[in-house]
Image (cartoon, rainbow, N blue to C red):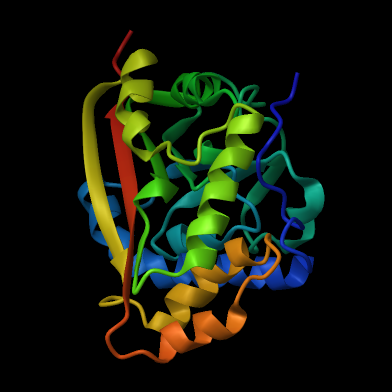
Length: 252
């Protein structure tokens, strides 16, 4: 049975606006994530499976580095939006439509937090990755996000987001749980890199648009004026840790 998801592409309102936000988020964060991917050997000519690929924003960046990317997402809304040259399948993360040992890397970015059974997804990613290849999962812990000066509306929206995920068995705080998940499915040489996405690397405007505004759109009395005041405040600061957790597939 397909896994339910805590996220759908149209949950924040206009689909085209959400796709544009996802693209902007991928572009803004890639330069921070890139050194980790490079050290893992991901940025080269190799076969990569992107699980939870969405509209293909991260995949398009990997393709520019020489990767041959196949994308999988259970949400068919994205089908016409994927970048040229990317194979795209509509399928569930826990039931991937590929033969065993088909890819050099299995990669997933900001999808595991939405899955009610991330272990099953990790098992499938491991199955379709070749021996000595790597499974790479990138995700967040929304409870670790910090905004200064504090904004009550952001705190409220974050709590709602975490609670919503919990109601379907998903985990919006999954980042620190990822090493254990990869160990559970038998991966070796597990590595954890934490990338600091903050307002010293991104402008406050960009941080607000790609990380704060979407959550605020899910609550009433969102205090958009207060968010604009925060953006204009020269003393304001915010950060959100991004966990990049990887493991090597052992030989049989």
